[in-house]
Amino acid sequence: MIYIYDLLLNFMDSNRLIEFYEWDSKDGLEHIKKIPLFKISSVDMDNIINNNIKVSKDFLDKINNKTTLYRNKYNIKYGVLFCDLNKVVGVEFNKEGTIICRSSLLLDEEEDILDEVSVFEDYDFNYKVLKEYTYNSFLTRKELFKKNYLEKELKKIYTDKYYDKFNYLYEEIFGKDNKPLEDKYKIIINDINNNYNNKYNKLYEIVRLSYKKNRLHQ
Image (cartoon, rainbow, N blue to C red; front, side, top):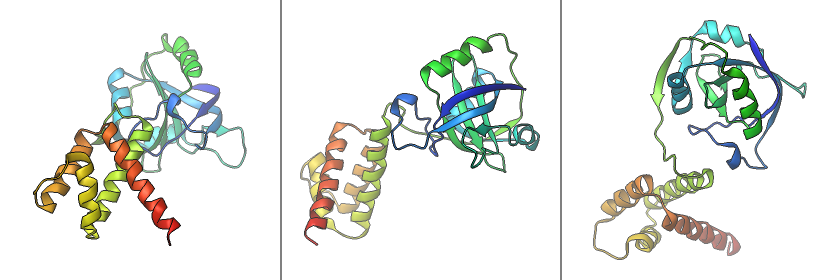
C-alpha cells in the first residue's frame, strides 16, 4: 500500500468539494501524519468528487485505521487519498462505506503527489453510485452559504405568514406586481436556485440586517 506523509486536510461535510483557496481560518484542519493513497481513473475520480458513492467492505477493511494524525487524540478510521493524473482528493467514509467528508489539498502538496503518481497503475475498486449531487459549481463557498441561508429564511418568512416582509423582499428583486403570494414564492425560490447572482447577495444583507435590528429592539 502507498502512503503519503505530512500534509493538511480540511474534511468538509458538504456535497461540494471546497477548494483550498476557499478554506476558512475557522475550519478544523487536520495535520495528517500518514494516509493511504490510491491512484484511480478519471471516471472514478469524477464520481468521487461529484456523487455520493458506497465502497465495499473489503475496501473499508483495507484502509481501516491506516490514517493517523499528529495529535494523538484519535485517528481517522476510514480515511484515504484518491488521485488521478490531475487531482488529489481526501475522503472519509463511514462504517457503511459511504462518503461523509471530502477535502481538497494545498496546491504545493497536491503537485508533489501528482509528480509521483504517473508511474503508478490505477487501482480497480468496487463502488456504487448512490446519488448524483447537483450544485452551482460557479458559486463560491460564501455565495453557497448565502444562497442556502436566504432560501431557508424566505421559506420561514412565507410559512410563518409574514407576508408584508415577504412582499418587501420579493419586490427588492422583481419589483411590484399583482401575482398571488404562492406564485411569488415559487418564482423567487426557483430564481435563487437557478439564477443566483449579486442581487441575492444584497438581499442576504437586507435579511441579516433586519434580524440585527430586531435584536437591538428586543
